[in-house]
Length: 69
Image (cartoon, rainbow, N blue to C red; front, side, top):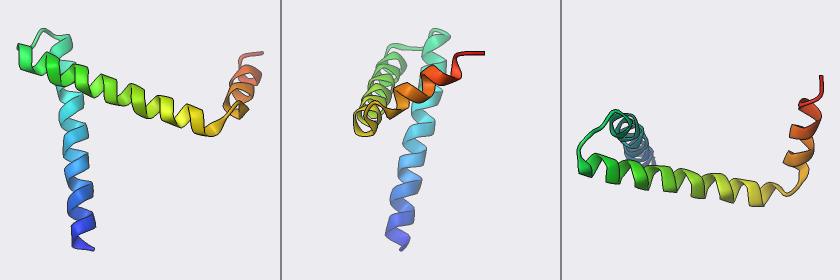
C-alpha cells in the first residue's frame, strides 16, 4: 500500500509543479519553464481528449440542454 501512496504523491507533485510552471510561463518565466508548461498543457489536452472519446455523444447532449434558458 505504501508504494501506491508514493506513486500518487509523485503524480500529485508533478501535476502541481506543472500548474505552477504554466502560471509562471504566462507571466514570462525562463525558457525551461515555458517548455514544462507546453508539455503540461499538451498532456492536459491528451487527457481531455481521451475522456471525450470514452464517453461518446452523451456528454454533447447534456451540454446542449444546459445552454437553453
